Length: 175
Image (tube, rainbow, N blue to C red; front, side):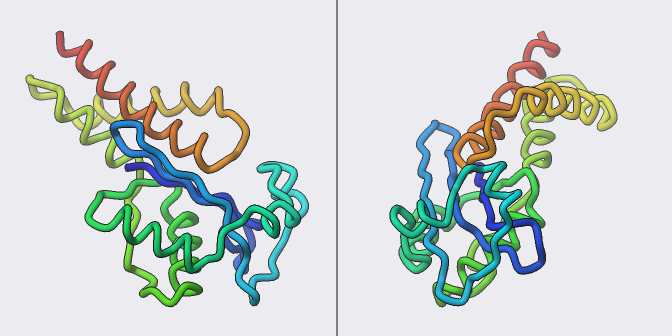
């Protein structure tokens, strides 16, 4: 399961404003997050990248409690991967804490780790870690070159597509 957040900025005080996740089978969910009352961080340059305005969050965003509860319900017990788990983990923690959940109720792993496992799993013959790493990094680089607009669901879906592509390429190399 791949997850992504969009945020108010990239400052230390940044907060999550959108979250999305996508499962291996393609099921997905995306939600705008109405900022908690004490969340006041905002950067116009971040808004220019993701295109999410404060007005949109006020009118269509869901309360942090609702978003966090749905995430706990849907994601507990799953391996959760993000392309940037240090940033996404920060925003996940802020969301969970604001909603009254323990900050580590959900934990993120790095997407690249899932890609490496996927490449290893389909190889019947021994392949060096360096070769697998080069394969994964090449696919990531090619895929990221065609990144769509920065929105959480598009970014999470891209991670899933990279995972599928790694499996496919590794399988073909194995044939």
